[in-house]
Length: 349
Image (cartoon, rainbow, N blue to C red; front, side, top):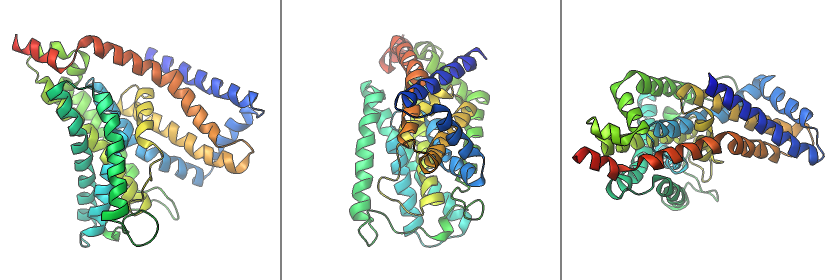
């Protein structure tokens, strides 16, 4: 409870700081917040847009939170999301039409597999060379997005000037929820995995071992837990969650892979996870908050003279006041604990 109150106070401070920036820029903070929040929740279109924006953040937030629980910092959710999206788009467009449920499952599993394998590269480098996963995953973001850009521009490019893949078969499309609504059953897939990750972390031996490694890798090694194996498995599962997020966007929203389709869902996932306290339920509420801000920003731009960039200022303030202190604190703690080599040394003794 104390941690929740602490995060809530930081969130209020972030909103206050963003309001000050708006005030000194010549706009009314109260009018802006009212238009943004009320617009996002007062109509079906606003609620639908909030859910559309929140859905990929649920996946990327879960991906980062799961890794954080193991003391591993997966900053590469953006690249993993792109690889998962590309894999799902190819499987959904190039496989012949299949029974609906089967085709959807194959495309989602393909997205999860490629997202997980992309994260496994960072796991291998961390385990074999004790490389810093923060640096590796950030670098893999650029490689992954550029690789997908190449595939969308050349290998799998559909006819026309836009770098995109062919339209997916209807048998692989996730069902839309509501007449004319943009959000799809990808939302329910995300909610399902919130429960899966919650159960994994708090009701399984694997989750217990994962958290022990995150709490103290040396003690975990001394207790007989295979720390390198646990780190590899965690990053694999983390990348799979991010890949699922990309697959959900393609199958449920865009209907094909479009180059540059993500406005930074993977990077926002870091803030979502930290704001949510690295707990699955916290990630869900945090993703909804960020989705509300994105949806409210669109309404703000249409109904007031306040620039839509104000939403970016709010997000930056949240990261500055809420996410950054927690991230730096956790990085400091894990730096003191030591890495994979230290855990191996303890285990050998």
